[in-house]
Length: 205
Ligand SMILES: [Zn+2]
Image 1 (tube, rainbow, N blue to C red):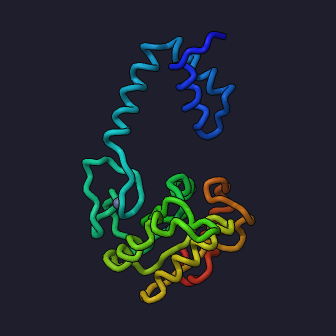
Image 2 (cartoon, helix red, strand yellow):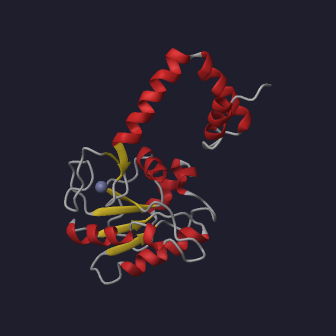
Image 3 (cartoon, rainbow, N blue to C red):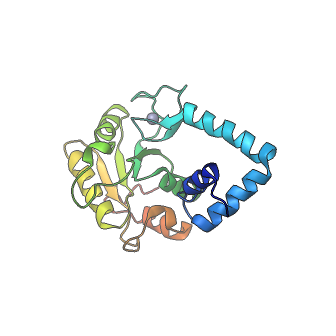
């Protein structure tokens, strides 16, 4: 096949997406090219819109429209007032927990974990978590990081950062499979991990 730069570049980018390799990327590119008006044109527009208008909140870590100003007292785009924050690594973890309907409260998205090498602490939104806990009158912080070495190291680091505050800190129950990432858990496992979270028995919903 004749090498066409534009196509090669598109295949390269698409094969970086989760679950896609070069083979499926080529199929997608072919589908796009065969549907210029229906797919490529609107896709180019919505991608540009997302690039321009959507970013991560520097306080709670969630995705937000740039037109929304986050502040510590009204950071998330929800009307309810809660006294719990669930700390997760990525927004996909938040989506898993939300769709299982087991938890009602705020979320805080760290944006990753502390690597085993102990770097990148600064990249995680830990100091903004501490500020939120203070300013939002939070009573419980639930650490829902993965059951991996990095996830547990991160949980320990956060626990340490919160130690001087008068709040309950709980961790998802040990029922999590070792190496388990939150987003890959089924609802039943998530439910029991939340229900049986350690550090808070009398008010566990
Ligand atoms: Zn926010």
